Length: 180
Image: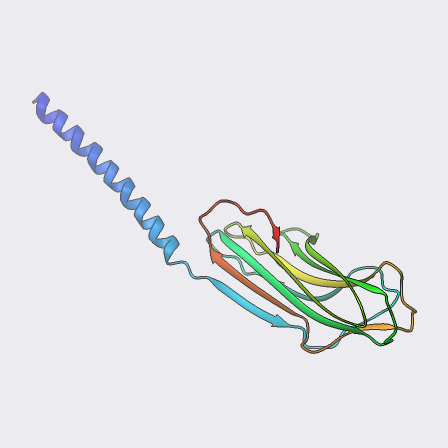
């Protein structure tokens, strides 16, 4: 009877281990079946800012939808701007920013300072987004350094400013934001 009891105990332990392994396999399969998310969006109207605008002006924004799974977020932006005064040497600074889910503050993730009459700015970053979170990203522009004349304007050009975002299922290590 002692041997039978020991055998039953051993079977129970084996069954418990198998149930844990099965739960682990189910979890891994669920992660493999998670789908990536991607979106691209463009500003649909022109934007002009004065040559004296020294605070960030939002050019375009996007909200990343929440997911039940942790994801690796990759964001890329591009924008073309030009000065109405062809002789200006005033610089512009663009910022790609992220606002965490539930926060009111946007934080820089990448920035670019350019000069010249016509400017193309591209900014990118990669970052881990935890499950259930829905961050927002935005692209801003401002005059940097010496201001231009108030009559000079900085205007969007074709193609319109765009934001591209891809969120891939992620089971790896946490990636703090990485400007690329």
